[in-house]
Image 1: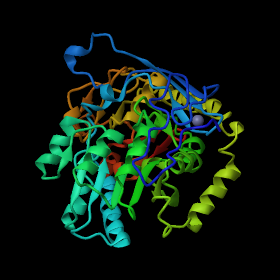
Image 2: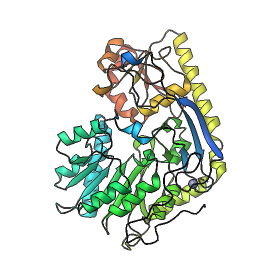
Image 3: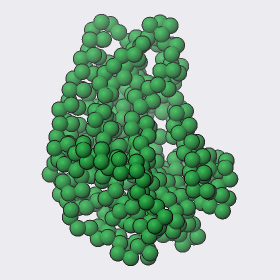
Image 4: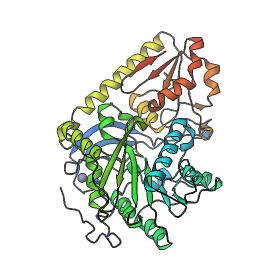
Length: 431
Ligand SMILES: [Zn+2]
């Protein structure tokens, strides 16, 4: 592996590693990109929903080229758009999925028990969104602090009484929080690690802020399920990195935060929750399930370039099958409506070239999106009631990771013979 500048004195505030990632180089270890995993063409930013008066404007499209680093096997996009542009006014509100909220409540209960958290403890969440998770710790009487870069989303949390700083987390913010007396026993980040352009700055910030016997848990989609499940729509500009346990272990260990445990979760089509603590904290040792997953990844070959070579041809096949289904349905006069407006939906629709010629509109529970249009494809986003008025033959479920929840909510479409279409891992119709 190319040398990185490791923090040599972990008890002191960690030193910066390599600085901001350079173009065409691995954002962790700095090796030049030479091996492409998949080219999904050009796509607009997935959360850039358009209002009606913007429909005739030019839209910026950026490449969705996925690379794998031959040194550390971190799978990643180049950074074409800065985080500030993407995340400072973000339309994603975590609190609109029941399945996700249940997941968060269980996590809070589990961690309070496991770490023995009390009213003297502190929990810091990075990318705390609208307070969807910290609210459960607050209900249990644990002091919390959220750090959230999107001001509009952070305001929602603040209105709920959840202390939230509107900032991008990194070493500088961590140092400022530490100077102000924060020393969290638990730092957590759900679905934020992928979105961090300067990963060394981010992990180094966690190292500096965490209490000596503290725990950090981070959740991210698992590269193994992304690749094996054909989940190419997990790729969008907001997701700079795609982690295996292998690459995550290298990154956290390099910053003096070895991973000692891992859980496999069903969220987002298959995620990992890693647990890490300070290298100096000898109370934490590698669990059996960590060793088992390491072995599984090695067997799959995530640390070999060969593992990544067949993905692109499978992605293209998935596109052809979905288009074949949609063409046949339209030829038979069927009406198709979408459900949801998630980031992954935009990758799928733009990569496959699916616009209002196939999908009349999509519906979403998030009122912030109603009346807007999907970027690139310009499919209108309407309130869920419109689906019941339209009585479509097929509902294309874009957040397929929530398909069970959505199909039970919409079970009533069977009244008129409506059916569900799930596009990933390959197009499947459910009655
Ligand atoms: Zn690398």
